[in-house]
Length: 74
Image (tube, rainbow, N blue to C red):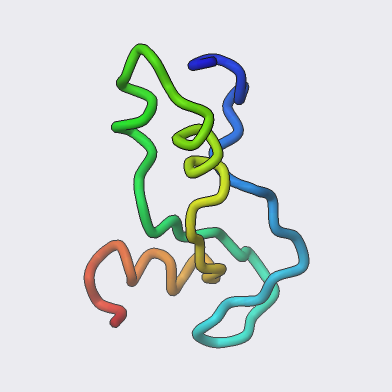
């Protein structure tokens, strides 16, 4: 089951706007938790697989997403 998600990291969300400024241009999803530790294991349970797909995400425009990763957006 480690290869079954075929590169899909999260549920797709369309028609979202930036939660900071409300922009609908160049919206990116910021993922709250990483799935790297799930992919590193040899055996993945169904619950871990579902958790990787259903993880929390926040829509942000590319400008605010960059600020958040630089630590300049609270």
